[in-house]
Image (cartoon, rainbow, N blue to C red):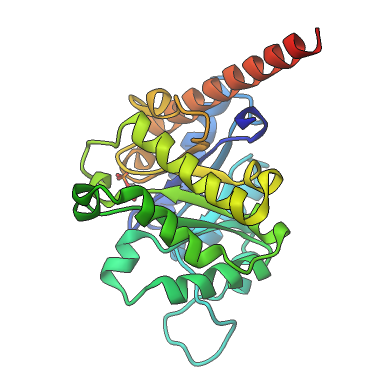
Length: 279
Ligand code: 13P
């Protein structure tokens, strides 16, 4: 079934690259992928630059007709008003953003961001026609206690209740165990699969199997070109939210190509088992 979901490789640049560096990066990435005859229908690519670089990336992506989606790293839950420093979902949508990262652990840690305003941000993002990438994942302490799956699933449950089926379908969840972010050591493929399956199970119980099979669940936390294929061993892992490895165009392009390879293999296997069942 995972074969029907197009994987997403999303680069969360965090607070890196000004608008000049951002456009240079995107040109180089696009060139590397074209040079490798990359088939853009195998995997979706997204870049989440800092707010200051979104407009420059948007202009470049449009003028060169690149198959690269744009996302933001945060959004306000409010639509306008006297909120110094905030950026609304409508503003991001006008810049052709397709995705918004919501509830990243770094924002939960360094800013007053909790499950309550994460819910409001998800709603604002969906209302503006963009897709939220909801970040969840346990810290080392929850893992030590053996409650990591309950913790991650609980973070999703609080946010997705009361969505329509259509809204639920448009959700993406990134399972990012906090202890694996920026550490050079990822979770295991089994950890990633277990969390992705548990999160998909929650969607199935809440919205039914049809919706659950459309939701993409990403893994994040020290994912790179060397471990991408390994981390996608499980059928429920639909790509990556990438930090450090998305800052190097060569590394990021390699990772995208490997994810596309996994996607092609999954498609082939699904076709083969379908043919087998019809005979
Ligand atoms: P790293 O890939 O640098 O571990 O960061 C992951 C992350 O936080 C993506 O949102």
